Image 1 (tube, rainbow, N blue to C red):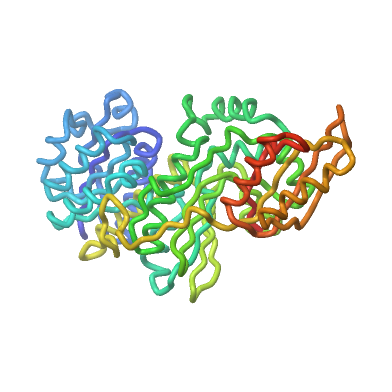
Image 2 (image 1 turned 90 degrees about the vertical axis):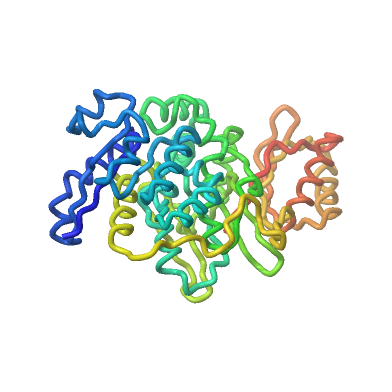
Length: 426
C-alpha cells in the first residue's frame, strides 16, 4: 500500500473540509485506491481551531520551513486564499520537491506561469481543480475527458454568491441591497463582497478555464468585467415577462476571428439549461466539435464540495506517474498572435423611459436604424408622469454600436433616456 503524507496550509472553510474528508475516508481510500493518506502537518494561525479538529499538537507547524523539511510530507495543500503568504508558501513547497494542490483561484490565475515554471524545474505536480466551480469537476473534464475536442465556447454560472442574490431578486422581487444583507447573514456573501458582486472572482475563474479550453494563455486583464451591483429589480421583472432569467455569466468563445472573454449580467432564455441553475449552485456549459454540448452542474462552493475537489487532486497526484502541465506556453501575458475580440456580437435588452409624445417612438426607431440595430421584440407599459416605460430586444448586433446608440440617446434626452442595457443569451 502506498503511503502519502499531506500538509494543509490553512484550516478555514475549505482546508477544514478537506481535512474532514481525508480523515473520515482514510479507510475507504485504503480499500478502494490502495492509498494510506495521512495529514502529517498543518499551518494554522488559530491553534485552537487545529486542535479542535483533532490534529495532534506535534503536527501544527510554526512556519513553512518545518513543512518543507518534513520528509513524511509528499503533497502540500494550500487553502489560504489571497496572494501572500500563499505564493511564498507554494513556491517554497515546490522548491523542496513537494507537489502542491491549491484552491486559490486568484493566486493561480495571476501567477500560474511562475508556479508552473518552478514545479517543472523540480519535477513536482501542481493541481488546481478546486480553484474553479467548487466540487464540479470541470478542470479534470477539460484536461482528461474532452481533450479530443476543440472547445469553441464555454458559458458558466461560476460564482455562487451572485447566483444566490440574483435568484432571490428574481423569486422575491427584492432589491439588490436587501438580498445582499440576507446573503451576508447566511454566510453566502463576505462582509466585503466586492470580489464576488463586482465579478472579479468570476474573472479569475474564467481566465483559468478559458486558458485550458482554448490552449492559450488568457490573462484576467483581457476579460471584460461587469458586476451585479447595478441590477434593477424592474429589469428582472421585465425579463421574466419576455421569457428570460438574469444570471451573472462567464462567457468564453474561440473562433476564426479570435477569442472573446467576458463576465457580466445577462438574460438567459428560460428554456436554456443554465436558466434553471439557482441559489448557490454553479454550472458550466461547454461546446466541443465532437461531443457538441455538455453541461456540468453542482455545488460551486462550500467546505465539503471544494474539499472533495482538493482530495480528488491529492488522489490523482498519488496515483498518476508524471505531471501534467499546461498544453500552451504559460506566460504572464497572452501570446503575441492571440487576438481578442472586444467588439463582440450579442443580442441586447434595453429599457428606456420615453416621452409620451406623438412621433417619439418613430424617432427612437430611426436612431436604432442609423446604427444598424434591428428590433426583434417590443414591450410597453402604461405611461406615468408623461413618460412611457419601453423594453426592446434587439437582433444580434455589435457591442460598440449599442454603446454608440446609448450615448447618442442619452446625450440629447430629447425623446428618451436609456435606463439599462443587458446582454441576452438565447
